[in-house]
Image: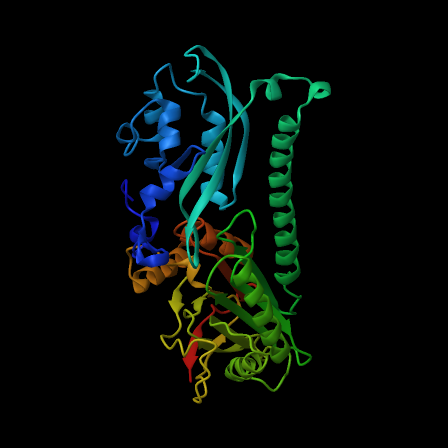
Amino acid sequence: MTRGTTPAAAAGGGPSAAPGGDALDYRDLFDAMTVPKIVLDRDLVVLDANRSYTELLGMPVDALVGRTLADALARVPGGPPPVRRALDAIGRCLRTGLPEVVEPTRWDLPDPRTGETGPRYWMLLVLPVTRSGDSMVRAVVVRVEEVDADDVEGTDEDATPERMSWHSTVARMRATAAAEREAAVTLQSSVLTPPPDVPGLAVDVRYQPANRITRVGGDWYDVVLRESGRAVLIVGDVAGHDIDAAAAMTHLKGVLRTVAVEDDAGPADVLDRAERAASALRLEAFAAVTVAVVDPPAPDGSRRVTWARAGSLPPLVRRAGLGAELLDERPGRLFGLLLPQRRKESSLVLEPGASLLLFTDGLVERRGELLTESLEHLRRDVEQVVDPRLTRLADCVLARSTPIRGADDVALVALQVAAPPAGGADAVGTMTG
């Protein structure tokens, strides 16, 4: 965004409409704010600064825009301010998407009224800038507020109302952020529970949130054990990685789990019945979901796995001989579309020692790369994992294949058929259906 460009225009819109048909100019609004403010991109390059900020520094806006914050402040007449705590706060805001408060920091500057240089104190508020429907922090606004030196340097016994006010502001924002994180962690822990024990199968799950602070989003996994001994594996992805996406995810997971426990339901039935139930309950959310049903073992220890997909990515099988294969290219319609056609199913016989992975798109999607190429990267990564243990396979896949930390949520469910006795046959997968 260049100086004078409105945020709406930078996002593809235009100037805001004002009463009377006049367009509000971003520059006029920004400069009308009496509190100093500066806008930084993700690389901490100055995008803009309002008049109050440039007057504070005694520098024209053109001397700031296009420079990194450190470079711009290094040119301030009278010497640069101490910025380490500010930079740390900005970095946290970019990573977490949460506002940050920096307690008053001393900066020796000339007093504009007297011209004498002396200690002045500034409290910073760092605010994230996101785009509607996207939680990625694209820029930050840093608000600078001067605090009276007496309020900062006085003792607790001599605390002024102003000093008490800024102490209260800092404490309140920190308490709010802590409460939001605690609530989000509680929600995540209650929804994404450990899988049940399934005799003869190793089952492992992984969840990596895009938002590392709230740790919730729209992706989920689930494992349901039926009375018959069949296991149902589910991974799903509701668009978004914020509290709204987490709420929608929680509702859909509950509906799918309720249907999945019924022993007569194949994976396509689970998706179709859950879709109708979600519609009846007015859960207006679209999701990409994979449901797989694992049958009890055959006499030779092998397991038949049947799955159906609702707009999701194909499962991946790894055989005991380290060969890996993506299983089909029939994603099916997205969950929530309510079309009359029944979803298709595919099945695979997994011999002892073979593993199956179900995952959401955050595991593979890379900017500027075709999805087919990203899936091939995942397939090769799975082949190259030497350790046969399922937990190590899941750890390695997550570490090697997640393309951009924090770009999207990731949910992964992996299963492995119990290994054969020493000298047993290699695992082989056979596609049917």
